[in-house]
Amino acid sequence: MGRLLKAHGLKGAFKLELYTDSPKQRFRAGEVLKLQVPEESEWFGKTVTVKELRWYNSSAVLFIEGIESREQAEGLIRAILLVDQPLDALPEEPESWFDHQLTGLKVFRNGAEIGSVVRVDHMPAQDLLAIKTESGDVLLPFLKVFVPKVDIANSMIEITPPGGLFEELESASNEN
Image 1 (cartoon, rainbow, N blue to C red):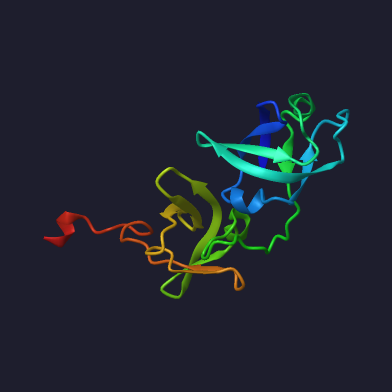
Image 2: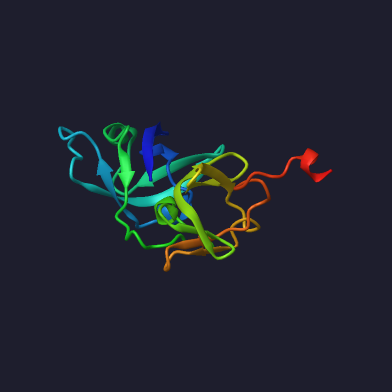
């Protein structure tokens, strides 16, 4: 879910590198997080509990219960924070899914199966579904207009892509 980059301030806070799209959900007060640290660390095999997540100049800053000083915080620098979560749990936001829930879904167009999702690419403008078809991978913008139905329970996605994305368009010379 994130990595502790460096100590922030004198009261044991951490500047946090986020690996989640849902920081408010993942870093709520009282959430227990596993630590990925070297075996020789005094923190190996332990968990931490979130005290508070704050934002300073668009940067996430995490406060952890029991860490009250900069010196205590220094021992956890570069630790990766993990969470146990059922693979079928969905994000709190409506019509949201985790990448692992989309990967492998069968893709249907006009009732016919045309391929499967092999990955989700997160781009600045929008997410893209990489769909493996018989003729190769096709990147489809993950927008409601092109992906009107995602059915995790039935392992399928229905798409309505723009013309030319999954098939060759007739050239202008053939239309004359």
